[in-house]
Figure 1 (tube, helix red, strand yellow):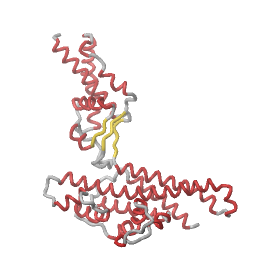
Figure 2 (tube, helix red, strand yellow):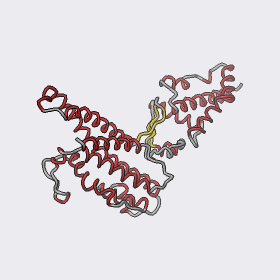
Figure 3 (spheres, one colour):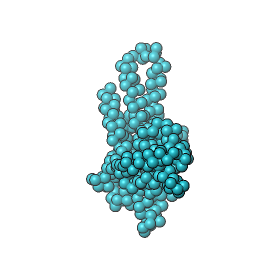
Figure 4 (cartoon, helix red, strand yellow):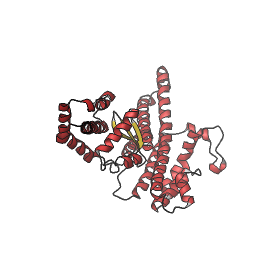
Length: 346
């Protein structure tokens, strides 16, 4: 066999093994980086002739079909050559974080990505945990769910003390104080993250629309509003984004409580001050809002934000998948509702 032929067969075996390792990593089937790097530590060119022949036969008989099956099952345009390129990119950093749109264009769209409700602005994260996605709605919805759970647990324990006389509570004063701190902290977290979730959702649909339309005629006013280059307010986003993107508007009844009442609590949490808000913003007492955030206001805020999101989602059409994070916060809102109902009966 000529040197050229040996090199060709060595490259064939190496690339197949690297592609398989990359595919297994994406599926979460590799548990250590040593295992991932192993196919690239072999000196394939100097392998004995018998091993080269056996390796080439295995590729033709088994490995090529397994790689093709992996690509076909999980991706629409992935190839062995692209898996090799992906292997090299991951190897350089022992991980990879890349915008989904870039991953899609350089390697392949992922099957089921949109159907499962992932947003286009997701970041692809490749590690020993496999291929995963990160996006701000996921972080904030998780924060909301965790804070809701923490509030309910603390409030349920506080129920045990609410029927007791003050004289009976003295011995548990420190425990009660700790529970109250957890309850109050959790309510603030739910309120803040609910508004953060709404804003990142609005910014996400604006970004997605702009990416599709940026090469088409788009007025400077609309472009600036979508890119938020002129400090677009939350009210403007709620009122204008649906109109710009879908040609529809949200009825005032869908957002009035959120923007006229709940936002005062949110702004007091984000910009706490003993000074009252300026008259043009309602002139309300910020400390009063800060100290009197009750569970009913928190529930109405979460459910009102969900209502806005679902109203916008309905504008996309019936075949559009539900955002992957939305069912979780709806469950959290239901738990808050149950707790709110119970608190009314006290």
